Length: 453
Image 1 (cartoon, rainbow, N blue to C red):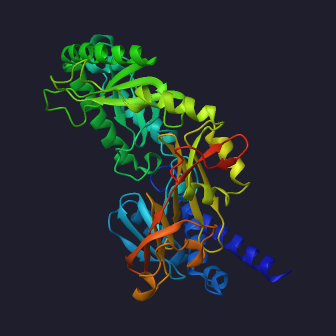
Image 2 (tube, rainbow, N blue to C red; image 1 turned 45 degrees about the vertical axis):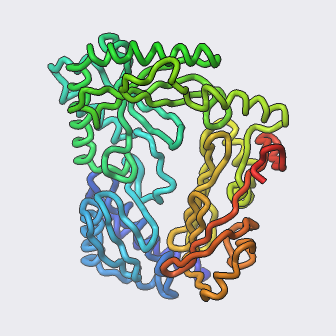
Image 3 (cartoon, rainbow, N blue to C red; image 1 turned 180 degrees about the horizontal axis):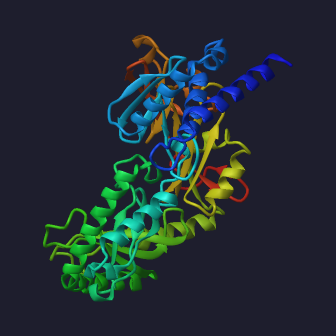
């Protein structure tokens, strides 16, 4: 048997021991403690990376395994706790359910065994936590008038940001308005990472909204008549359609005002026919003459027609184009998903630390978020590279140079540097980012009129 085979057999035996010691324990959300601890030790082996890591882990006494299991349960249920794994990886919680292993965030995901990188966890309300939320709402509204609103379902819309929502059915008594709530209001970093206590607290908050909605249904209906008149007129003028009116009362329970959302069927962020969102504040000065509908209703249809004349589906910025080429299966596989979805996520294997990438649509342009914990972060035209130090004299001369000329990233990046700044343990680069046209079916990217260059 070769050394690697012996190591794998040794680790398999360790996980069998973990299962015997902790297999009867639960992390609190249905996840086995044994599975979570096995993932934690795998992370310790990768992040700590000592030469004799497998030997050290396999030699752990049962008492230490039991102690580690207890610490892992506590760190996921406690704010600001930390401890060290056997190979030196620091485990620390900043909030309940939000835990870092070294620089990497790993969460519980109700309904799935083990721990999961935050970038790989869905953001919507689903799974056992969603079932638990609905059961709490059913119990809490039993014999209450607001129980007539029923139970919420997940809804998704993309505007300036992604909105993973919960929608109740339209309420006739409130003018057909939909009660809505953001699904990420559990205080956990993801809905499915929330603890049962957090889900209960979220349910109680939603029921408070339901009570307020039902008590104020006549005022909401009156407000809806005004909003719908404005929205219907704008939709008719621009060839759009009003899908629904919605209200989020979580910040308006004690206010006489009723700010309301309009969901249009128009040209969405991905330059396709889809949902377009607008917020109409409760103000008397908003009239049919002064109301300006969102870009997806008023302007994007013309931009979409122009793009189609050029043979393009939309635009892509330089960083998104660069990192898409590094995706498993290549850029074309990513573009195939973006042709029907708002986002495509993938993981790039880089050896010790994985790089997580999300390509997403915003106002007709494909953009990127890039995260390589403790090493590389990209967000809104700013690149942070940790562990890459340059003298001040060198930083001052970076303007106009390309990123790949000064740092080795897990993908080829020819974006030009506009300015460089200090960052603790690294450098911060503001980049010159242009946009080009893209045809998602062929993967072709090219310069064109009004391309941003």
